[in-house]
Length: 211
Image (cartoon, rainbow, N blue to C red):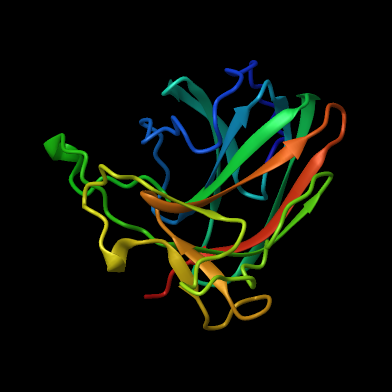
Protein backbone atom coordinates (compact mmCIF):
# COMPACT_ATOMS: atom_id res chain seq x y z
CA UNK A 1 0.00 0.00 0.00
CA UNK A 2 1.40 3.35 -0.99
CA UNK A 3 1.84 5.92 1.70
CA UNK A 4 -1.26 8.13 2.03
CA UNK A 5 -1.23 11.76 3.13
CA UNK A 6 -4.53 13.50 3.85
CA UNK A 7 -4.89 16.88 5.56
CA UNK A 8 -7.55 18.35 7.83
CA UNK A 9 -8.41 22.03 7.78
CA UNK A 10 -8.87 23.94 11.00
CA UNK A 11 -12.13 22.98 12.73
CA UNK A 12 -14.54 24.96 14.89
CA UNK A 13 -13.18 26.06 18.25
CA UNK A 14 -14.85 25.66 21.59
CA UNK A 15 -17.02 22.67 20.67
CA UNK A 16 -17.45 20.25 23.54
CA UNK A 17 -16.09 16.72 23.29
CA UNK A 18 -19.31 14.83 22.65
CA UNK A 19 -21.52 17.45 21.01
CA UNK A 20 -22.30 17.54 17.30
CA UNK A 21 -20.71 14.21 16.48
CA UNK A 22 -21.82 13.02 13.07
CA UNK A 23 -24.63 10.49 12.98
CA UNK A 24 -23.11 9.21 9.76
CA UNK A 25 -22.01 10.38 6.37
CA UNK A 26 -22.35 8.20 3.29
CA UNK A 27 -19.04 6.54 4.11
CA UNK A 28 -19.14 2.80 3.50
CA UNK A 29 -16.67 -0.03 3.77
CA UNK A 30 -16.48 -3.68 2.91
CA UNK A 31 -18.28 -5.88 5.44
CA UNK A 32 -14.95 -7.49 6.35
CA UNK A 33 -13.32 -4.18 7.23
CA UNK A 34 -12.58 -2.53 10.53
CA UNK A 35 -13.00 1.24 10.67
CA UNK A 36 -11.65 4.04 12.84
CA UNK A 37 -13.08 7.56 12.56
CA UNK A 38 -10.78 10.51 13.40
CA UNK A 39 -12.34 13.93 14.08
CA UNK A 40 -10.22 17.02 14.67
CA UNK A 41 -11.18 19.53 17.38
CA UNK A 42 -9.84 22.74 18.89
CA UNK A 43 -7.93 23.72 15.77
CA UNK A 44 -6.23 20.36 15.25
CA UNK A 45 -4.70 20.02 11.80
CA UNK A 46 -2.86 16.85 10.87
CA UNK A 47 -2.03 14.46 8.06
CA UNK A 48 -1.99 10.70 7.83
CA UNK A 49 1.57 9.70 6.96
CA UNK A 50 1.17 5.93 7.31
CA UNK A 51 -1.98 3.87 6.76
CA UNK A 52 -2.50 0.35 8.19
CA UNK A 53 -1.15 -2.55 6.14
CA UNK A 54 -3.68 -3.35 3.43
CA UNK A 55 -5.84 -0.41 4.49
CA UNK A 56 -6.47 3.14 3.42
CA UNK A 57 -7.53 6.54 4.72
CA UNK A 58 -10.35 8.55 3.17
CA UNK A 59 -11.95 11.91 3.89
CA UNK A 60 -15.73 11.89 4.27
CA UNK A 61 -18.14 14.78 3.80
CA UNK A 62 -18.60 17.25 6.64
CA UNK A 63 -21.43 16.45 9.03
CA UNK A 64 -22.68 18.62 11.88
CA UNK A 65 -19.82 21.07 11.35
CA UNK A 66 -17.13 18.41 11.79
CA UNK A 67 -14.64 17.15 9.23
CA UNK A 68 -14.23 13.37 9.21
CA UNK A 69 -11.49 10.96 8.25
CA UNK A 70 -12.02 7.21 8.13
CA UNK A 71 -9.26 4.63 8.30
CA UNK A 72 -10.40 1.25 6.98
CA UNK A 73 -8.45 -2.00 7.09
CA UNK A 74 -9.19 -5.64 6.18
CA UNK A 75 -9.94 -8.05 9.02
CA UNK A 76 -10.82 -11.70 9.54
CA UNK A 77 -12.01 -13.64 12.59
CA UNK A 78 -8.38 -13.92 13.72
CA UNK A 79 -6.76 -11.15 15.76
CA UNK A 80 -4.29 -9.08 13.76
CA UNK A 81 -2.19 -6.09 14.79
CA UNK A 82 -2.49 -2.84 12.83
CA UNK A 83 -0.75 0.53 13.04
CA UNK A 84 -1.12 4.00 11.54
CA UNK A 85 0.59 7.34 12.04
CA UNK A 86 -0.67 10.91 11.99
CA UNK A 87 1.63 13.94 11.94
CA UNK A 88 0.17 17.13 13.48
CA UNK A 89 0.56 20.41 11.62
CA UNK A 90 -1.30 22.29 14.37
CA UNK A 91 -1.93 21.33 17.98
CA UNK A 92 -5.39 20.40 19.22
CA UNK A 93 -7.55 17.40 20.07
CA UNK A 94 -8.50 14.39 18.02
CA UNK A 95 -11.54 12.22 18.72
CA UNK A 96 -10.96 8.54 18.00
CA UNK A 97 -14.07 6.46 17.36
CA UNK A 98 -13.70 2.70 16.96
CA UNK A 99 -16.51 1.15 14.98
CA UNK A 100 -17.51 -1.34 12.31
CA UNK A 101 -18.28 -0.91 8.61
CA UNK A 102 -21.32 0.91 7.22
CA UNK A 103 -23.27 -1.90 5.54
CA UNK A 104 -26.75 -1.23 4.18
CA UNK A 105 -29.22 -4.06 4.78
CA UNK A 106 -30.99 -3.50 1.44
CA UNK A 107 -29.02 -1.07 -0.72
CA UNK A 108 -31.37 -1.55 -3.69
CA UNK A 109 -34.40 -0.39 -1.67
CA UNK A 110 -33.08 3.06 -0.78
CA UNK A 111 -33.49 2.60 2.99
CA UNK A 112 -30.91 3.48 5.64
CA UNK A 113 -31.30 0.33 7.70
CA UNK A 114 -27.90 -1.17 8.46
CA UNK A 115 -26.72 -4.71 8.91
CA UNK A 116 -24.84 -4.74 12.24
CA UNK A 117 -21.31 -6.04 11.65
CA UNK A 118 -19.48 -6.23 14.98
CA UNK A 119 -15.73 -5.63 15.14
CA UNK A 120 -13.52 -6.37 18.14
CA UNK A 121 -10.62 -4.14 19.24
CA UNK A 122 -7.94 -4.46 21.89
CA UNK A 123 -4.52 -3.40 23.13
CA UNK A 124 -4.33 0.18 21.82
CA UNK A 125 -0.87 1.63 22.29
CA UNK A 126 -0.09 5.23 21.40
CA UNK A 127 3.32 6.82 20.87
CA UNK A 128 3.52 10.61 20.84
CA UNK A 129 0.39 11.37 22.91
CA UNK A 130 -1.29 10.29 26.13
CA UNK A 131 -3.93 7.57 25.78
CA UNK A 132 -5.57 5.69 28.64
CA UNK A 133 -6.94 2.19 29.12
CA UNK A 134 -6.07 1.03 25.63
CA UNK A 135 -6.48 -2.58 26.75
CA UNK A 136 -9.99 -2.05 28.20
CA UNK A 137 -8.91 -3.65 31.48
CA UNK A 138 -10.11 -0.80 33.73
CA UNK A 139 -13.90 -1.04 34.00
CA UNK A 140 -16.59 0.45 36.20
CA UNK A 141 -19.29 -1.42 38.15
CA UNK A 142 -21.52 -1.51 35.07
CA UNK A 143 -18.69 -3.14 33.08
CA UNK A 144 -18.06 -0.06 30.98
CA UNK A 145 -14.44 0.73 30.01
CA UNK A 146 -13.08 3.69 31.97
CA UNK A 147 -11.78 6.63 29.87
CA UNK A 148 -13.87 5.46 26.90
CA UNK A 149 -17.26 7.01 26.13
CA UNK A 150 -20.21 5.11 24.71
CA UNK A 151 -21.06 6.84 21.44
CA UNK A 152 -24.32 5.18 20.34
CA UNK A 153 -26.41 6.67 17.53
CA UNK A 154 -29.78 7.64 19.03
CA UNK A 155 -31.55 7.42 15.65
CA UNK A 156 -30.03 4.06 14.75
CA UNK A 157 -31.84 1.86 12.24
CA UNK A 158 -32.14 -0.85 13.50
CA UNK A 159 -32.81 0.58 17.00
CA UNK A 160 -30.22 -0.14 19.66
CA UNK A 161 -31.15 -2.78 22.22
CA UNK A 162 -28.96 -4.73 24.64
CA UNK A 163 -27.89 -7.11 21.89
CA UNK A 164 -26.82 -4.26 19.60
CA UNK A 165 -25.03 -2.09 22.16
CA UNK A 166 -21.25 -1.73 22.30
CA UNK A 167 -19.73 -3.76 25.10
CA UNK A 168 -16.79 -5.79 26.30
CA UNK A 169 -15.89 -9.38 25.47
CA UNK A 170 -13.78 -11.59 27.70
CA UNK A 171 -12.91 -14.63 25.61
CA UNK A 172 -9.51 -14.94 23.97
CA UNK A 173 -8.39 -11.30 24.21
CA UNK A 174 -4.93 -10.73 22.68
CA UNK A 175 -3.95 -8.77 25.80
CA UNK A 176 -5.38 -9.03 29.31
CA UNK A 177 -8.97 -10.19 29.83
CA UNK A 178 -11.24 -7.71 28.06
CA UNK A 179 -11.64 -6.32 24.55
CA UNK A 180 -14.13 -3.93 22.95
CA UNK A 181 -16.96 -5.20 20.74
CA UNK A 182 -18.56 -2.46 18.62
CA UNK A 183 -20.40 -1.89 15.36
CA UNK A 184 -21.13 1.12 13.19
CA UNK A 185 -23.98 2.63 15.22
CA UNK A 186 -22.79 1.71 18.72
CA UNK A 187 -19.13 2.48 19.25
CA UNK A 188 -16.56 3.70 21.78
CA UNK A 189 -14.83 7.06 21.76
CA UNK A 190 -11.71 8.53 23.36
CA UNK A 191 -9.82 11.74 22.64
CA UNK A 192 -6.14 12.56 22.64
CA UNK A 193 -4.20 15.81 22.53
CA UNK A 194 -1.76 16.24 19.66
CA UNK A 195 1.20 18.62 19.54
CA UNK A 196 2.43 20.32 16.40
CA UNK A 197 5.37 18.46 14.86
CA UNK A 198 5.12 15.38 17.11
CA UNK A 199 4.04 12.28 15.13
CA UNK A 200 1.47 10.04 16.80
CA UNK A 201 1.52 6.31 16.05
CA UNK A 202 -1.49 4.23 17.09
CA UNK A 203 -1.10 0.44 17.26
CA UNK A 204 -3.96 -1.95 18.05
CA UNK A 205 -5.47 -5.39 17.45
CA UNK A 206 -8.73 -6.01 15.58
CA UNK A 207 -10.83 -8.87 14.25
CA UNK A 208 -14.36 -9.64 13.09
CA UNK A 209 -16.71 -10.80 15.82
CA UNK A 210 -17.20 -14.56 15.84
CA UNK A 211 -20.74 -14.52 17.23
